[in-house]
Amino acid sequence: MAGTLVTLDLVGIFVFAISGALVAVRKELDVFGVLVLAATTGLGGGFLRDVLIGAAPPAALADWRYLLVPLAAGLVCFAFHGAVGRMERQVNVFDAFGLSVFCVAGALKALDHGLGPVPAALMGMVTGIGGGMVRDLLAGRVPVVFRGELYATPALAGAAVAVLGDRTDLPAYVVAVAGATVCLVWRLLALWRGWTAPLAAGSASV
Image (cartoon, rainbow, N blue to C red):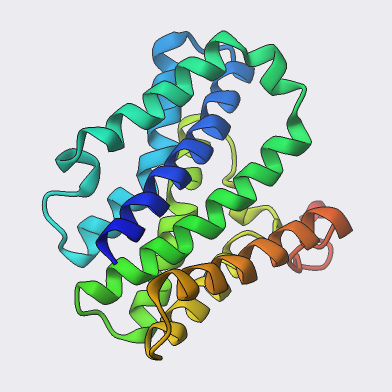
């Protein structure tokens, strides 16, 4: 289980860090700003999860790979931001993959630390959306999860599937794939079909 969690974490961190670095480049931040947003986006959700479940020190501070991966992603995006920027649709797809990986990794780690099914599912969601929320706040924009995007709901659904699967005798990787697939398919369908969460009627005119 431990090896599966680390692999899921590192893959999710890289993908999220790319999206954070791209936001920084579009905000015309310097290389330091790009690296900060890349690291914040990649590590923020996992850091919040570890603090909330009492996993001390957080994985982001205990394992050098957790710091190297987002920094590498930030430098890649800084150097090749033109090419990355033209891949907007692909970046959104990669971001969906990162969300699906993180929500499962967060839920399974919370279970490993003794949390019950419902808190563990919530921790999975926090792991998936936390870094993006901090990124958006630092970039001076309303977080994506508050703007009608179907983002947090798929993450919660994927985490819930992982939590339920963990209560069976299925191998850890099967549970992880099942949860990640639910989140990924839902998020990709939302992007493709333009699905959004309900907004208050007439809220734009208030």
